[in-house]
Amino acid sequence: MLTKRGKELRSQIELNSLEDLVPKDHLLRKIDKSIDFNFIYDEVSELYSDFGRPSIDPVVLIKIVLVQYLFGIPSMRQTIREIQVNIAYRWFLGYSMSEKIPHFSTFNKNYERRFKDTDVFTNIFVKILEIAEKEGFLALEQVYIDSTHIKASANKKKFKRVNVEIEAKKYKNKLDKEIDLDRQEHGKKPLKKTKKIETKEIVQSTTDKESGMFYKNEKEKCFAYLAHTACDDANFVLGFEVTAGNVHDSIGFYDVYNKVYSKFGDKLVAVAVDAGYKNPCIAKTILDSGILPSMPYKRPMTKEVFFKKYEYAYDEFYDCYICPNNKILKYSTTNRDGYKEYKSNNHDCESCAFIKKCTNSKNKQKLITRHIWENYLEEAEYLRHERYVNSVYKRRKETIERIFADAKEKHGMRFTHLRSLAKIKMAVTLTFACMNLKKLANRLWKRRRYLLVLYKIYFKIHIYSQYKLNGIFSFLKICHLSTV
Image 1 (cartoon, helix red, strand yellow):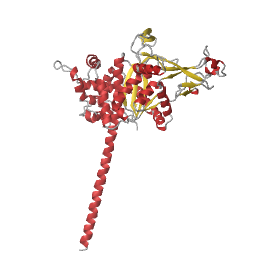
Image 2 (spheres, helix red, strand yellow):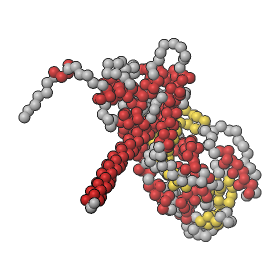
Image 3 (cartoon, rainbow, N blue to C red):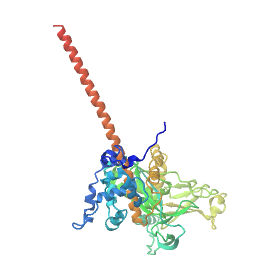
Image 4 (cartoon, rainbow, N blue to C red):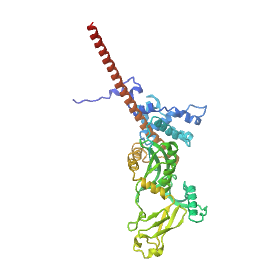
């Protein structure tokens, strides 16, 4: 039977409340039950004056931006439009059906005048993580660290080439002490400290100067930012750091690792990282913390026609290398980068049958470098074959890679319309806070439902057992009376 729906009901007047119209299992209901947002008042109390015109509720401002990042709405203007027509959004903010929603520029003005250069958003992220830890949802034994790029709002064809100062490595002071100590053990003088400022030429965007040129492969490139992220085995984001797109993964590692280790160091067992983090200093940092590094196999960068480095045996006792032709490469020096140099005797190499597979140097001399912390990297390579460490690395694609996929597909982190490092960091903070909030709310909801089901089962069993016992006693009573 054909049914035609008229338009008469459009003007019908009904008496309803927002509480009745929002579904009981809506995500925003779950979030509202999982966290009390009143702590925001204490966070922003110093940012507001004690007199003057009343402001918009700061909790409402934060909730508006949470709605944007929870549901991956691309802009604040579009977010306000969605809130105006969405009943669940209005219920979450505490606005009635007819109440006017704040203008889309309100949050931007408050950010520039109040929230900029504050820890408000970071504290929201930390608060959500503390609740998750208190509820026992975090699985901190295994931690996974990786980075993903966020395409910047900048044309890759509009740039200029500039010379910038090379930033000193975070572990430079420790490395210099180790180098001087190693040179003294080999009877060499410490290296002279140079004050020369090293520079390099980079490509700088004329649109967003704080972004960096990110190279996906030989052909693809774009201006981007990098979100260096750490998560646990339950897919909760534990910490992150945002840098320009031209910063290497190994440089952003230390800030993320120190944040996670300072909070949860006593609970960590293993840390899994990608091949981009496989270097001696990172291996030393993790092992010195008493944690197992889970690193992948990294293919040697040597050309195919030459011997690989692992084909030269290192003798730890005599501190030398032995080549495939059983010739010795003796220690020569330790350079400023922390690499010990081992050189062969050029007279042995001239008459060697493997010279073409060994080196193509003009002086017929083979040079092998070994970092002073190479033994930590060798220990990490040995641990790679352990069953537990290997299983931790296999979990990467199910944890940190899944977080990046969800952040880009569901929360709009694939690219950004914002410019400057501070604003990108705010956006990443809110994105990861919302992702943690969703997991927290859903798991608390499932737990309550599970407990409710258990309570109902227990209640039914209790009533049934009482009924059975009363029936038995009644039967015994009847039998007893019948025998009198």
